[in-house]
Image (cartoon, rainbow, N blue to C red; front, side):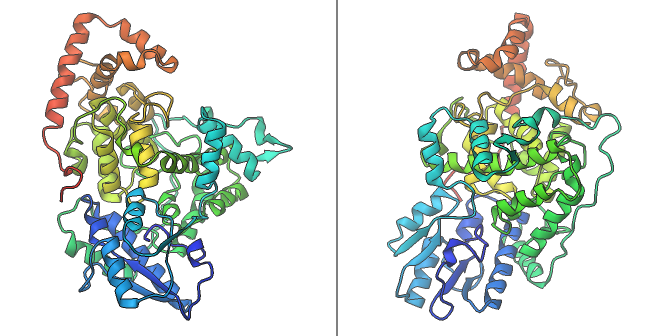
Amino acid sequence: MGDQLDGASAAFDGFDPVNDIVLMMELREEADTIPQNKRRIAFFFAAMRHFCAEQRALGRTVFYSELDEPGNAGSFVGELQRRFEQIKPDGAVIVLEPGDDRVRESLQASGLPVQFREDRHFLCSRDAFAAMREDQPTMILEDFYRAMRVKHDILMKDGKPVGGQWNFDKDNRKSFGRNGPPLLPPKPIFKPDETTEDVLALVERCFPDNPGSLARFDLPVTRDHALQALEDFVRYRLPDFGRYQDAMAGGQPFLFHSVLSGPLNLHLLNPREVIDAVLANPSNAPLNAVEGFVRQVLGWREWVRGIYWQLMPDYAQRNALDADLPVPRFYWTGETDMRCLADAIGHTIHHAYAHHIERLMVLGQFCLLLGVRPYDVHRWHMSMFWDAIDWVSLPNTLGMSQHGDGGVMGTKPYAASGAYIDRMSDHCGRCRYDPGLSVGERACPFTTLYWDFLHRHKERLAGNSRMRGPYVNLARKDPHEMQQIRDRAATLRDTLTAETFLPEPGQA
């Protein structure tokens, strides 16, 4: 599959180049499920076609279904059945376990002899994760992360964490200040070759009205590209990654972030080799940067996948805050006068990427405060980001960002007023809205919606010990001001969600 581009995966165990065939498929069903960013589609198809060529160069027979070739059935099951009838294999159809529960269920129901194999790409198997959660039902991410550090002997010395503590997150919350970010290293650029150019033409031809842009397409679509991107990060970006990982700057989509999530999620890179490259630390990065990155890959990434597979398929339906609004249409266009949102959505449209704090505290938080349906936020995320796979997107959006799981992913909602964005970015000084105001024409919508969010969910959240401070501040609000806030918030919800771009689930 498109997110399993590893020629040494378990799918190839015992592969006989004389008798066995690799089947790869570009599918309308997958590209049309939601109106995807052109860059996302191009990234997947270009990576798949390059992987196909690499496998053929190894002497492996590959049957490759291009999107617009005659006869392509357009769906996993339909195209698999067509190829099955064409090839008439003697044995099973071997599939590495998919990263999407929907795909797994459709393959199981296909009536074909599908045999799933465990994905060795990850550092914690699904069974191991389930066993850990059974032994410790109240386990949170930090518990899991520490257990993984010990199990894999990463950043450990004599049974204790290097540096005397497990987590250096308090050192990783610096803003850029008035002078903006320090000198940024240039981002590596991967010029499209003929194969990629063919894909770009295909996407423009077949998906002309989709959101996004293919201008200056430079994504790492091969393993060699991915290794170059990894080398660039550990040498030039890792030293400042830690301290500035939560900072934002206008017009700067990448900053000191690795931008390795796409190659990792397509298996062009292995998580252990990424961790080892960071631990080798050729740039002599400080421990808070090294540990912070290791925590994202060894802790957070593995935790998210474990939660997904343990709780699916019911997890997708969770909506703990009873949010019922659609994603605003401007999330596909960037046409908003809120500067932080316009900037983050602009990054998303033009690069199919925004770094994690933009996703969580700008794009995700606004939907949380507004009251958007959690699964719709997930579908938008899957639509717009080149690195999104169902297993990683759903817990991060529905759970972490929208608190739709009621606290499985995060012990409290990630809700803040415009003051947070003002502190961590340069957006507010150039915006028409004032983050310090909650009522009036110049009031920041984040600030208005923040107080309204606390008020609307008081019964649900006031008892959460981590929400004590916000609710103490809410209690100090003058009742008249609070009514003005609620009235303005109601107007914002009505006007901002009056139009949407994303069709309802199941619709074309």
